[in-house]
Length: 102
Image (cartoon, rainbow, N blue to C red; front, side, top):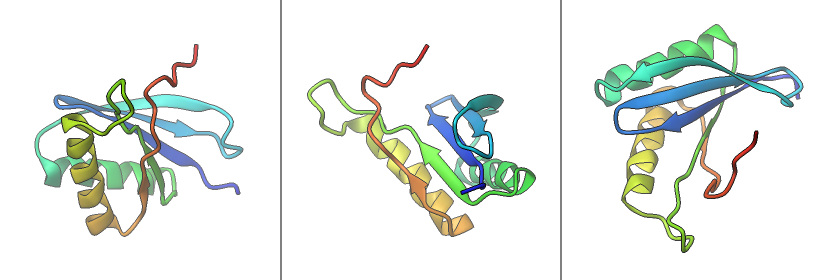
């Protein structure tokens, strides 16, 4: 388990990008992708994966306060599906409604 993980925080205007260390204990912010469209945005994520020699991508999964997936979750799902199609890597989407780490 020495492969790094690319973590994405996918929003409407920007995608925050972080990368883990090889031990997967610490994630460091590395980039902000300003959204243009699926094609250019996915290409940028793929470039980052290649730069860090990883196929592991983790995406935040926004949930409503009642635990249901809402409109923003559908947007994140659509982006992750595009990433999976173009890169053939799984974009994991765990829930993160209350995952705030200081």
